[in-house]
Image 1: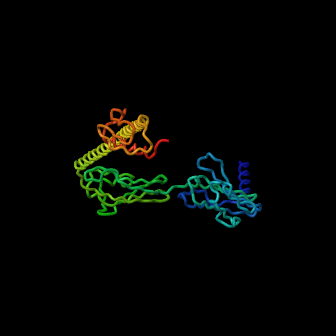
Image 2: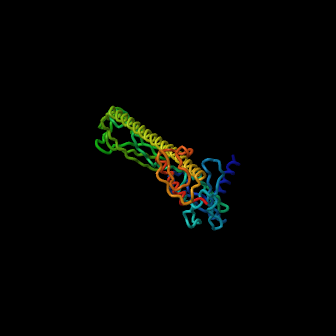
Image 3: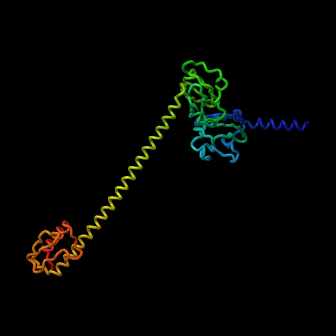
Length: 357
């Protein structure tokens, strides 16, 4: 027992002689994402604390998968704040004179990755002290969307929904009616603090403007909803109109397909006729040229030959030629139509203007 008392006395004397102590109590701080967190760390020194002053802030991440990280350091009258890349440029001492006993810091533009336990360590030999602060970063409710799920008709069942895009749990909901009669239906009261209100057998009295407010520990947001409960629509007429519209669309599509098919057939026919005409014309003029060469060989026409008179169905006369007058029977493969005979005479005139050499 005496030994125990001596041990406690020695410890008390040691604590008393050490002098340095951090007066800020350990605490938990909650802040919203994007805000600035003030982490206090104030200390006092004793007369025995004559060594150099060193201040160190460490972060123990919430996931416990990383070792403690030094985020800012004061040593040798200099500040070093580039140890931790995730907080680089966002952590600062609040006091310009750290020797005055204020080692508090500010963490700006808070992010969810900043959640964790922050530890303040102060050393001035022989005194040493440290305190821990738990920082929690929450997300304010934002992007609230209010809408009606269902048909807003008298006698129908539908739902009023309130959905935030983001926000840290727990979330609290509150519905209010702003326009017309502000009295809410009795059946809705149990659901006025939930994100969904189920409406049964709707009536026109439910119409109006509603607001939904979403809150958590760091902020709130709200949205407006206009509810218009109207008489039931003529569904039979709507269905009939839809059917008629569909039929008209099908008829129009069929007409377009028919016209396109007809146009393609006409284009194909024109190409075939043009090809046939070209083939017959080529074959006709080839025969005429062959007949001209035959006449040159058999009749020995002079170079200065005059145009032949119009051919007849009986014979072609040549009063200036020494050759006997040929008949249609004497000319092999020559056609006997009047139109082709005129063409033959025209070719003879061309032959006269360009006699063979």
